[in-house]
Image (cartoon, rainbow, N blue to C red):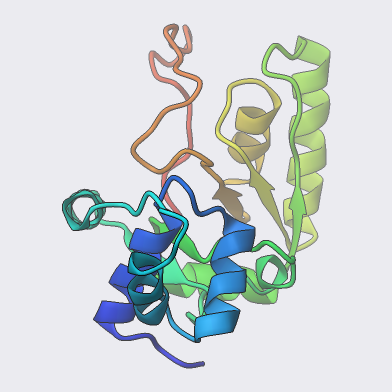
Length: 195
């Protein structure tokens, strides 16, 4: 798969982080102009004034991402999840934290999302753990958010067989924030990155 230059990756990150550019507009602009570098040049002269993200903001995000040990996966990256690539408004860039070999392996396996209530009952948690455990034993990777309740239970039950955590707000943003910790373990009980 084609790899993008650093300049193009930076431009894509700048474009998608711009307040006035959503995913659908991003892809329409890329289709029209062929590259984010060209898009940014065209938007400077456009009659509609787009709020373009500042270089310093993008630079700071890149710096923080590197400090966290993470990296950016562009849509063209061979590790970009193939099923995600099929949706019309696929995110142009993902922030990835984990083991690249493990993600490549997971991309070749079947995946299923397990999501549910944050305030789930003991019975629901037990049922979720059973489902996630059974899926893992059948070589299916569990994908979920990182919220407490069903999401966390799904990860806990499938961490040994394969699980991917998806954080919509970024790897350095806990949303919604949790004030209480798991009373048994003294921690939030969240899984580690893909390893």
